[in-house]
Image 1 (cartoon, rainbow over the protein chains, first blue to last red):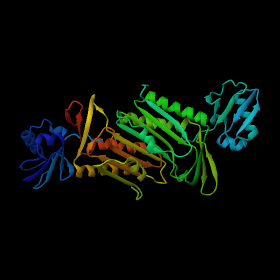
Image 2 (cartoon, chains in turn cyan, blue, orange, red):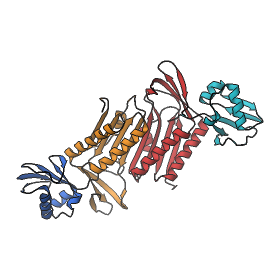
Image 3 (cartoon, one colour):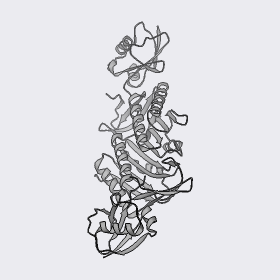
Image 4 (cartoon, one colour):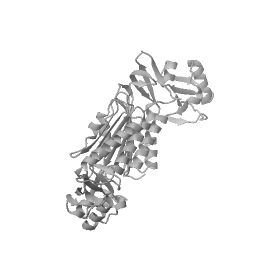
Length: 78
Length: 78
Length: 143
Length: 143
């Protein structure tokens, strides 16, 4: 399925792009592993939250064609 | 000894005056009893703090000629 | 207390300028400012309040208020504390008291602000006189 | 949540007007307003900070921030909550975040204000990018 990825903060800097469209067959855990390997992320998945279509989602969320997926590194507002 | 009394809030309203000069021989406890009787105070001494010469003082504070004495009813600022 | 810490309590007879007090706390070292405004409400104990007056034993009130601020500066890891309390006639919605605290971190700022307003209410010789919609009036002397 | 309670969270790209937000909380039923300002400090973790930028995942940040405010309105006995968080480039001393809470009594106002700022810091997808006096820069991703 085709997924829209958006990147923020250190994960965007490491990716070097703000958005990507990827073709991915597995689940969100496998997607983060693939993206991490490709972009050389040092951030373990345990520190990252998943957001799908603008809402925080559990890591076992079933992804669907066209979903917008964001990996949220630890936040630092305030 | 001569003492200067100043009254505030409900104790002033009940006294009908802001200040008085009294001649008093006893301690502060006896002074409050005398003033209460004369002005018809309903407020028991246990609810009142003593201030002498602009500072809060214990009820066993020894009074001296010319002291300014104030009886502080429960405060309600804020 | 380090030389750069500062705190001030004042009685105010004309109107509390919260924005100016807030600005007086500005400090490049401070990441957190917590402010408390006590505002005159239109009711108290179920009765409609039409007017309110605060009376202070001014000398002692300023001394006691300053002592509270100084104690808080010594006890909490904060940089600045400003507090003002109105006296005289107030209208509904007027600010009766303001306490502002600046600190490097929010824990200390919240704790100190709460402490100072609690101590002001408990210790500073200021009394509230309320006039009610039905024409009655009373001095407030909490138990 | 009663119809007269109201709460709002917004991202702000140009400058937080604390006085205006404070005024928006005015309400004749409210005796207490507690405000928290988070201000850009000149240091972090022992290093001099020269510039700071906040980036947000805007859609989710506004939704999550509004959820935090709505939860606090339901949980605490308060009347109004306003919160704004800056995004973009900030200077030392700029207000990065403001949370204001009005309530009849100060207990609830303090508790709700503290809760909202804590939840904003924990949950809202906003990230801080710091540039230091020595030219280095870093995204802040707390453990």
